[in-house]
Image (cartoon, rainbow over all chains, first blue to last red):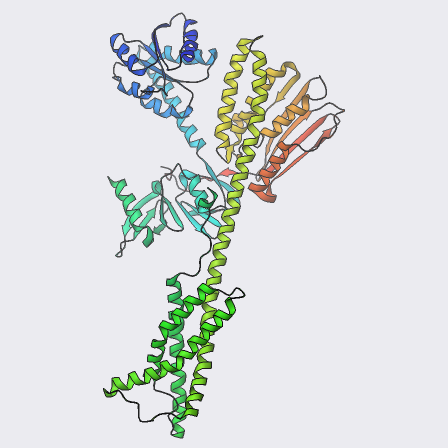
Length: 258
Length: 381
């Protein structure tokens, strides 16, 4: 397999080359510090495999990957220090993902998957490769779900952890915040502001001084004669916007409809 | 930053609320005055005397009095009741208003006769005598002074209630800000200690065993990545927490080799329970530190997790040098104790004590925290 290395750090490139040289079937045909140079070289002499850093000064690895024709593109392995690119990487059909720093063991595990994909000539082999990829994607998705913050709240007489993605509505209620999840409601000993902060991964919309809605859970929007909005949430709860927030709610909803 | 999170300081009553309360109060006063005067008038006709003006005049009088009333209450809500200025000012306002009431009545009589007779004249009863004038003025003054007092009490009461409620909200917000700040500080205290110890170990490995040093760097990176993501959240899954402990022990085993034996429950076999992020870390760190101190023999560390239907108990047991004394509680343990107190109050506890001649045990007990399972499927986008 012919491979190229794209990374703007010299030491990072040489560490990768060192790992590649230990493998008899890998031949490094080029090293590039700039993504633009690499793109040119890929067109001139297409390699089988690219080791690609994501965060580079001028053109990012992700941009380079998008610039390649998916039909003829070489296999891409992203090499990065950040683990939050995993899902994006699969969108540009990267074959694998190597977290910095890595050791020989991880490099070989990654290479085994690359070889499996590269050598997939029969239908069965290709299916196995795709299934392995799907498995990786599922793990990445689960990781996102698991790393979503949870809010500790009282409900039904005991403390429970509430996934922020399931919270439909936050309401200030004296010293508590009431969370609405489906048909149930919970109390968290916190302020509306803090709860809103914990919900930052969700699209939240404030509809009155004491009420914030998770837009993902809005099922229906109606308007009153006075122009206030009535939102029906997935659990069936109905909330209405206050006069002071009417314009903000309208602006937000209009943006969503476009 | 702090001021941004807190709600604004309590403000005096809003003009709209003031208008509404005073308005309703004044309608009530007008109605009761008119009804009272009417019934008294019915009584007075028995003696063929016109003591009380007809209801139209009373209504006009009260309408005329509304603007000065609002002005007085507005000034009163701004002046407050604080000494030394408050009380005299309030009294002055009340007297000013009450003094105005009789002239308002005279004006109302003039307005009404003008309206009904189309000329500017007094009704037939003629001018009252000086003594009559004095008596009616006094009666009107006392009656309206008391009425004004009731209204002022109402406005002040509402004002006080609003301030009280605002300050309560502010108090709750302050408490929360303080709690968050403290939690962040506590979590940050945990990592540097661990980090520098491990960096020192790796430094020592670079020359004699470069292979091991390289793999330790990778392990440390994994540990840091987990530490980082765990410290950004208040809660983590028990399996993650155990995975974290395993990574930590693996690194320490590289350091101490044969001396350290670790017994861990299988992270994958744990129920999906939630625990405060990094709550085990100080216990695990202490077990390694104190287990190895004071002797050069082998050390065994055992981590146990016992979930029951409503409580979760996590135990870290380590062997110690038999002669090791009972040192005071370190910063790690008091951190854990404090975090449990902040998040669970009396519902969670930490105990650390000698569990035998040569073993030490730290135990955390807290309510079982399950993820809320939504009743209907399809709620999650």
